[in-house]
Image (cartoon, rainbow, N blue to C red):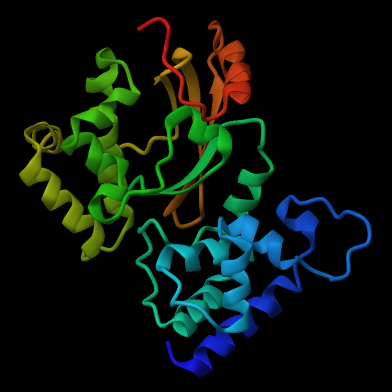
Length: 286
């Protein structure tokens, strides 16, 4: 990245953090604050970066930030879509496609997510690419943020990688497959007919999975607006939850949150989940 853009990149980061109050991003105000907005260490914490690395970015030094780091900074600083595109420009990176794992998260979705600390919740795209998860969602369904390319979509992994199905009991796999295909057809219908992203995914799945091809031929169309599903957890066993969806205006993003299913012991299990967090423990029932 050119030196002048490095300097502008750092200046832009400083200007954006100065306008955000800690309470806006779920941080305590605290006494004796010397800056009106966020401190550098707070932005680093929110973006999942080291303080030293973030300091280098603001100074206009260091290496070119990755697309994932730019996306994390955009979320931490509550950038608008235009501001985010400008940040990518300053970093010399292309703006990610709308459905990619680094795409811009709807500000309202992100705000709601951060107001649900005691409920497993995550924001995904219409193609089931996970954009952000809260800690309880990571603890419940695992970290979904490390996938790139077509594999970033859970639907793609569901039909091409058998281990992806370990999240649900085998008895539920057929129903999950049918729901995923109907939901994908509904998502494709909302997009432009020439949308390359969804067209490529459907073509790849038709070639890779006979199960997907058979279900696609049935032409079922239905968004997943709410589900009652069973999730296999390595420590808690099977947790039965209601999965609720809130859609953005254009339908491209969804806030998902999980509540205990009535008539089950899932409320107690989810309470225990908050204690266990993401500890790697073995299910004693297995």
